[in-house]
Length: 385
Image (cartoon, rainbow, N blue to C red; front, side):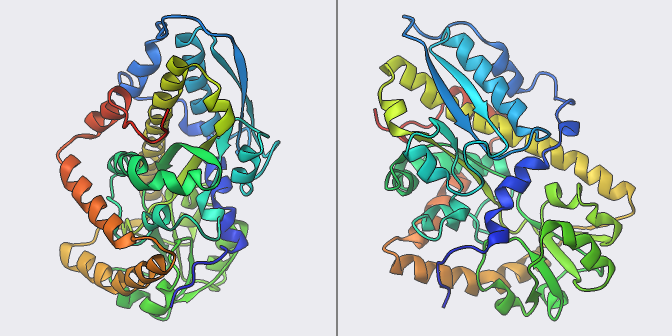
């Protein structure tokens, strides 16, 4: 039986790493005319009366070379202009106020007014949000996953934040994890007996699929592959590319198995003391800046595919039968998680049904339409005011 327990140190540090490898290299080439660009270009005042100016601290663990701070800063600049300085943001990066862990405690205590608060670093209490990280629960498309998360945040997910004494801010998914290996992997059977470095938040997967899970720091993966200590890595492009995993693992299997999420939250007192028009502006802003980060992450993945192919990596796309084999192999892992979720007093099975319903609801929308929906029609009710 899976135990919902404290994540290992390597997993707890994953969000900080992912923030760091959003390299500035991938920031410069912005798609002209995207809905995000249109939003950022409209800086006409959005408030009828100018409130008193306040300064907010926004904290995160990303290093200066990360792509995320420029995205956040562009959003903060937009907010300051349209609110005529109602809130002025000061960003504290690189773990200056707190690191990849401790975000909930720090923001609840007022060390920052807003910032990252990673649910993956929490031992318990976030069973619903972590259900999105189970194999084949979330859509492959992160734009669609982002919309679904926001819709469900307004009904059930928000309670996991408010019980920790904070408000949820923007929660955004990264492209689902996939696999790189030294030998071609097409079916779960191909993985059996292999030694695998895995960054899935999926307890029990190694037992279910018959591989050995090896825990290594990011910096040791390349050498471990080179020396034959491990055979494969389940990770994402933002790990494969900067660590040049493609030099040792020449096969890339498009599993799209499960996403990670980057989570942020707000200090409740800081939000509650705002005038109502500023609250609404701040509330809507969360989903707008969140979808802009999803867009930049997707641009990263598009460039990453070119790098892989130019380095002789064989990209393996699974057929429908092979995909079904992976889904069937992972079914017991999902079932055990659902059982433990119920023991924690939550109904993760009902949540999965809601995810499936919303997949169908928004399945026909294009990426640009999903972006515009986040910008023009943000989901209401995630914070009540």
